[in-house]
Image 1: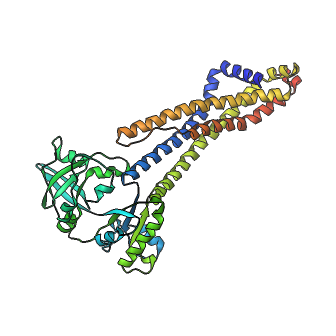
Image 2: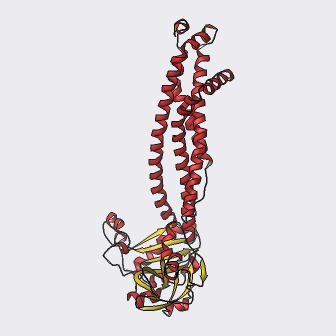
Image 3: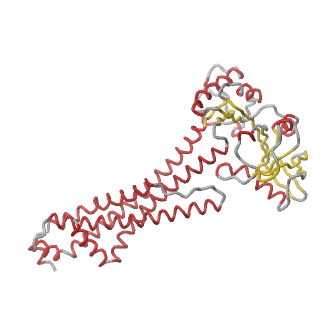
Length: 413
């Protein structure tokens, strides 16, 4: 085997251009696989971090169009995406949910649109009306200022906390804290500015946050909420607690048939499952594309090896005439094929890692807390696939070389 390795290494070094071109297809394919797997690991870390900002132990309750048809109800989802307004979810529901054994805290939420004015700057904004309990559950932090209190919430105080982008758009370089901002028909005192967020929480950077009671009574004229966030004590009991919440809401809303629920309870695990399902589908698609590149690279190696066998027919005849066995010739050409693919795999891993770093760099430059990582299993897959391709596509040319008749081979010019 060592002799086969020496001979293969000598041939590869003697034809550097051919070696580079042969390994190029494998390198691109392996680099794509590494990029996909590394990006997947980075994406999952990003999603986990973003879900953690909502609170590590949280469940979500949202309004839903009731229907006897489960698939129809599921497809329509929350009332915010429908022209039908569901008004049955209220703060009283959250107060009852808070009495459940595993529930620690909760808060309600409403959403609205208005025009915000500060001096000569005017913006159409989305504002969220939230309970003060949000600041005990949510892990987002303030860049400056303070959160509003439960007393300000219950009293309908006209105070506002701005997302980082919105604060910049309205106030430019000025400090917004302590200034009056006209939202809709009311003046609001700016008391805080959020730090910039990333991922699916980045949308909050362009929003304003006002007390729930203020939004309900003074802005929207409603007494219901569209979403509730529930903090639980034991995450292992999330499914049990989710069922308890559903039972409480059915009792409050006089619902006897679960198919007619006007709400939906979602656990963190379900949220992550949705993201994982979507990303796994994308990953499979990208790996399939990479596999095509790998097959093309493998076919290229096989073709080149057949050409090499033809070019070295006389050499093969001479070696066999001097006593080389069919196994020796087979080992030499198969080793050469495997070395080419392993070489392509090594450069592919390095190239894929470099591309993964570039993706992480660009993501971080755009405000995403993307973690650069190349998992060990990605490297193992890269080398494993390289070896398999080298053996699979190198066997036929190697067998062809081993079967050559030494006399006929020596006559070949």
